[in-house]
Image (spheres, rainbow, N blue to C red):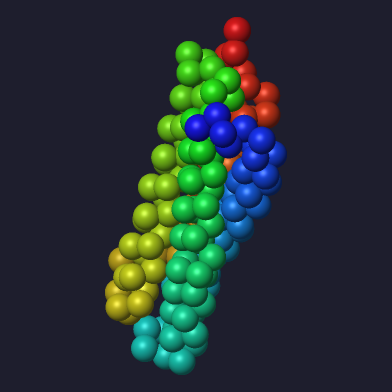
Length: 150
């Protein structure tokens, strides 16, 4: 993996761009769910939301998540980039895994809307809309400040 060291800056650029795109989707998709939950199932407006949600998840969010994880994994595998004994790294990793889980929940909620099933109220999606912000705050603090480094 040390052969990738000359490419580290480019990996970091890819990682930042992919993470930014993924987060944009994580902020917007739950907001679409809020609006979608306000319209009647089976209407043209509901169908429009279904198209928007599907395209956002499949064309932007999922590819951005994959690019984030691959570029981050490649950077983490480079010698000397990560101090594996530092707690900040493990906190960041757990938070990224939680963000992946949130992505999975968004995919499930999108499928429910696509099937015109309304299992949650608008308030649920309003609260869910805050989750990616909290996770992003922790991720950015861990990578930039690196608290608990000793």
